[in-house]
Length: 335
Figure 1 (cartoon, rainbow, N blue to C red):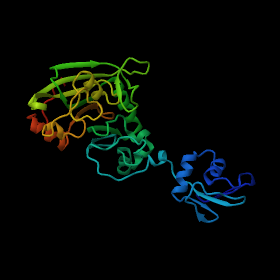
Figure 2: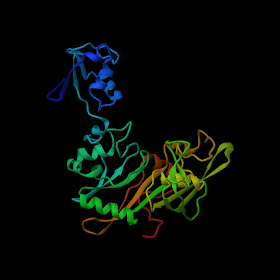
Figure 3: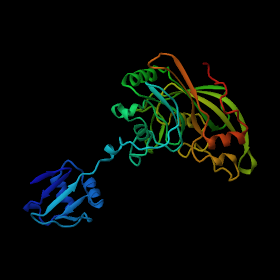
Figure 4: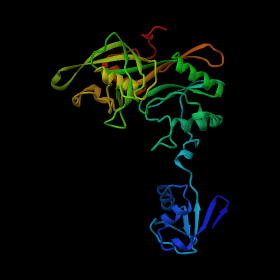
């Protein structure tokens, strides 16, 4: 028998499950909820037996015992919880906002990051975005990649921006510091797929699940730093423009081209260990920054462009390498 008491559920244990473990009994009484989730509710103190808080999932229950459950929100429900956080908004009007995402901030909620993402921060800053798919987010950046992202504030703007991304008219320019001598100009047209050897990585491949990926690369500057045994290492500052927006696209394409990103913990290529005094050791994440964003405004139809310089860790490395200026040099790509 089940009783609904406000937000709580009350059960009375049937005779045929007397003597069973609490989590097993709840799994039978609440079949739509996973056993693991029910166990977490017990451990969180959300379940009482005969008015006493249960703290052991293995405790036995008897026929007629009263079990009260305070239903807890799922991680997916928490994903759309507004969470106040500082956001660097570089532009905003009634249709769009452009944000400079910091290093370390995850864009979309997922396992391990259900309520501390850019999406949560956007919902706190602009509550009206709760009615928008994905809170208006139309593209993403990796957690440790910084830089510009556009967010739609209306369904009309979101539809328009998605179409622009599909038509490849959105200009997304990234700065990267890579190992090796980059060519003056290059174009990588290689499909990307999930790496069959590691579910957390991607790779260039031709499997049935590989997706088209295209990256334009231009050399900005070159520097040399001491390596192991004082053998000089060549480092290049490159600008990349995306035709497509696959997960880890620039990182995978640069590794495939023999130019892995400085500091990248996942796509290192065949690099040896750097000397402790090598300036490249300053980067504790991939040296990648979304520096420039251009699009056609979805409401006014006017072309717009924004630029933000990299965060301090990347600026410090670029200063040491003699790269610069970093405030806003002319794009190496044709406008």
